[in-house]
Image (cartoon, rainbow, N blue to C red; front, top):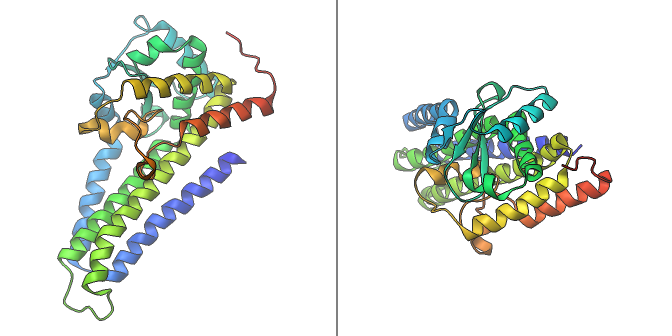
Length: 292
């Protein structure tokens, strides 16, 4: 039921993004600029979709590891992939000392899971298993596809607003006027960003739940998230370069937490809420059988 609700929420949010595009189209009218913006946005997001895994892995300096190099990690991923009856992704390790992890790839056949050196050294095998369950759920839930669609629509909105404002025609009778056009230029992309972030936060809650079910151990993931949260705040990464564009993929926000206003633009839901949900999930399920 929760999974179905998240799917409906995502569909509604994507619908809102599409509505913003229609609104901008009404405000500024059709023009050659709209067509150019659409082509550019389509090309940019096509590249992002097909090469998102390479971009994300490069941003963290990750390298692919063999089973001989990381036997425990391979064992966990192989077991959970088999439980999900899904392909095993490629495995990478980043030299970053901050504890974090992410999954990338456009579908289960082209997926990769990356963990940092920091998370490998900090978590117990049971906690690491919970984290891997979360990341595999991102792959199996097709979250990368959903994020790509949201990103494409968001970029389209921003570019359409810019093109339409600077190349708008002379007939303003049916449009919003110069002040309305300026407001659309600012508020359209801002609304698109907030909707994209809402989609990202919704996907994190879903991956927590489905990952905990896959691993059959919600308390392990809750314990891991508590350690990861402390570790990311003790060793925050700099929000610059390609890491900034990859941060929404990670299991925890890799940057220093901001104030109340900054939380509106957060890519992840509050960690305390995620942990509380997992603990409630464990309480509802009864004693956990997995003990290693």
